[in-house]
Length: 301
Image (cartoon, rainbow, N blue to C red; front, side, top):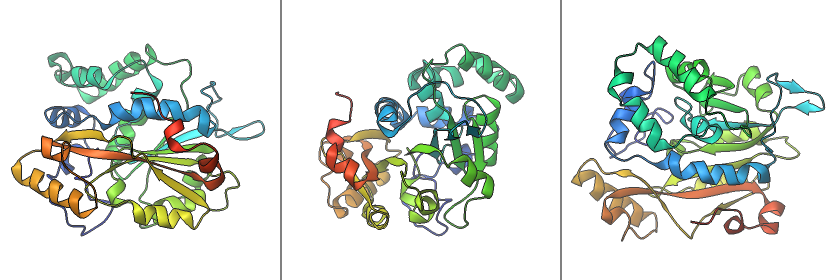
């Protein structure tokens, strides 16, 4: 998803083009059609980064039982916040690329299918491409239709339609995430605060890591400061940025350039060249961050 979506913070002003109508459809065809024309690519960048972080965060990729509880404690899981249709789960756990998903969901053959037929086709498609090191993925989003699709297509092991910015997690969500080792965010970070993360982290002897791709048009410092109160350190990958999507028009580009400059970053060669860019932020216990800095964990370009 893109951060044009502001459903997590009512009244938040934005000068980005809104795509609200594509995030809660019965299936992801409108999502891929609309964002494909703009070259949206954050999930592609996240695919390699998240796979590199999984074993370091304590997710080995060894197949686990589908039950919430395993012998010896809760099962290790990944929690994808603002998960939409489960696209990160599709890329993380299957031998597919984002480009292949764009081709699949915008093809004439797929356009002729009903949603029910597409879900059945997707179950077969993803089952045939399932990685042997796939990890259980829990999805969290306020889009009920998107969550339902991700569950029905077999991409999400569990899905929850909840907004932790305004309410505490349900008992079911709290139980399901007790073994979460990695929390991921590839869209919507601008509209999240520690209200979403605190109840998932507080009281945890070994809290999960949080890996978030954050648009450069805003600051993530408020999040880092809030999580620091829980004994967690947030590092920003200063070595690179990741193109998100092309601008829809000149006005949107002007907004982005001004916002990035106001946030203290340099838009030259990035936003000035026609794309929104994101930066990777990784939050984890301070001792772990000191022992192995972020730049030593990331895959080489």
